[in-house]
Length: 140
View 1 (cartoon, one colour):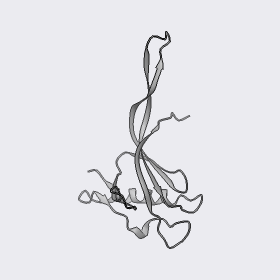
View 2 (cartoon, helix red, strand yellow; view 1 turned 90 degrees about the vertical axis):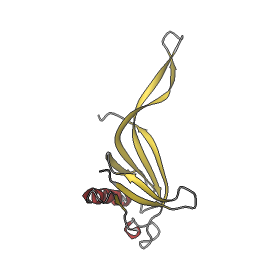
View 3 (tube, one colour; view 1 turned 60 degrees about the horizontal axis):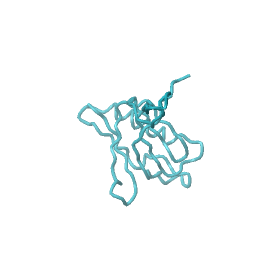
View 4 (tube, one colour; view 1 turned 90 degrees about the horizontal axis):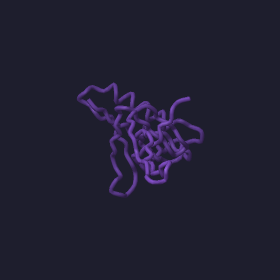
């Protein structure tokens, strides 16, 4: 059974409100900055990165690059050099995976969201959630 984390995206646009984040295939959750977390999935695909002129100059050859699926979450500022949003998401994934098959969605309570940099009493708000891809680099 597929599992999901339900997060609330603030804002007044048509894409605000509850957003389902799939748990299946998550390889890493990385706190990129004080306002951005990336979720990396084990989905590898090949995307057209552009075209190059062939060696003889007579044809074009497609250049393909391996990429992995990502979900980029932008949120209000947390305390500098903190991993609190990453830790929050790791805990939500763990809880979602422990739920029975009759409960495919885990919805963290708003008060469990990490606190903002400005106040220890105000939960941080998610301002954007975007699907995308990142280059898949070999581990050295």
